[in-house]
Image 1 (cartoon, rainbow, N blue to C red):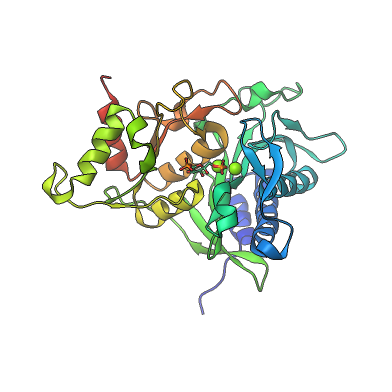
Image 2 (spheres, protein in one colour):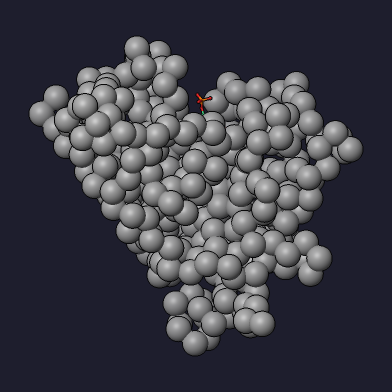
Length: 339
Ligand SMILES: O=P(O)(O)OC[C@H]1O[C@](O)(COP(=O)(O)O)[C@@H](O)[C@@H]1O
Ligand SMILES: [Mg+2]
Ligand SMILES: [Mg+2]
């Protein structure tokens, strides 16, 4: 039998053997993973627990909150304020930042998360997930003792020090990068631990599979229409090959498929809400996913710019997202130039 490597051992080796992460960051990732394990158990309860349906509240973005959105948010906050050695946290489900009070262990990191991604899939038993991103508190001046503010969070994605997601699907899988490739850990429920199951994930540069919500087609901008139109023409069209389509409506599940077998994912700007740059959130959806995809050899842009180079102006900033197999992302991005 091949040797099993737990997430803890993997992280200890990243710290001690390879010197890639400091001890505080290792602890932080372990605490996030423990929280994801708890969320996974809550998700699995379904109708057997009080976890389904709406909570009757709205988040700062005006979206109806599901019970699991709130449960997952609370689990992440509670676990990380005790064990995360953090300065502050921010979440899709909280208006402002949450500064970790002094009575808890303090640290130099900022944690951001989408506690439950794909909320519309909770009640229909389809894959959902948790997305997270870690930044340094005072990236520009690590020595300062200034209290942490929202402005400290507004760093471009290339300054992330760890990012990942946990998908709650047929298996619960934690996918992680600390800047040295992408590793996957499957939850062994009998042992209660995440086990390393794949390393050095690579996204093929070419693909014949796209993911986009086609019902929005009439609202898209010309470059996205052109790209999808060419895909739909298949063998007879300019691409000379047939394309397949998938849309799960959980970004975690769509990105997971792309990491496993390639593809392109798009949630572009559209005319429904022309003043919003897109639907997805930059800081805790696009940045962590963009970094994972790049670490696996793919690309992530907003059509004009690398996602990880966008300077955020707001915590809950939205962004147009095109990510996945490099050659396809480059093609869609090139269609945007000059307009
Ligand atoms: O229902 P739509 O418009 O296709 O949107 C689906 C997208 O919305 C999201 O669910 C947004 O995430 P939340 O569930 O965290 O709000 C993405 O995961 C997904 O790609
Ligand atoms: Mg989400
Ligand atoms: Mg969410």
